[in-house]
Image (cartoon, rainbow, N blue to C red; front, side):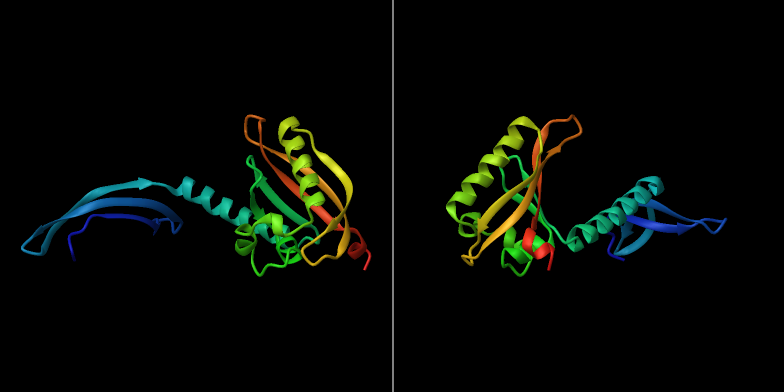
Length: 178
């Protein structure tokens, strides 16, 4: 109606009744605000779209598992900034959402000896690419309550095998048996 160019992803039903994804890109030839004809191309994107949908489904499944497993889980990038937290982790830290926790300053969440220990272990994993598993730590959080955690730091490696971050997993030991 407007003559504006279009770029759409569409599902079409084929003659054999299968649904198929295509990308349609084109334009309309307008004369006096009336469409005379349309021209463009269609590209078969069915395989790409099916892969995208499968990846999205797998992402939802993994996020469901991560958020509902009774462990604290987080991911840090190569600069040791948290980029993902599961529900157990952000709730333990006292936040209402993952986004709120990601924006927080970690130095306000733990006592200084705990912060120093976490940083040393994180840096060691990033430097060596070797996991630190099943370490037990006494941690004092922002609520001044001491807790015992069993903790592991696992290197997060890229497709070339280089460490580009880490995954932290911990469990509040006394709560495990409650």
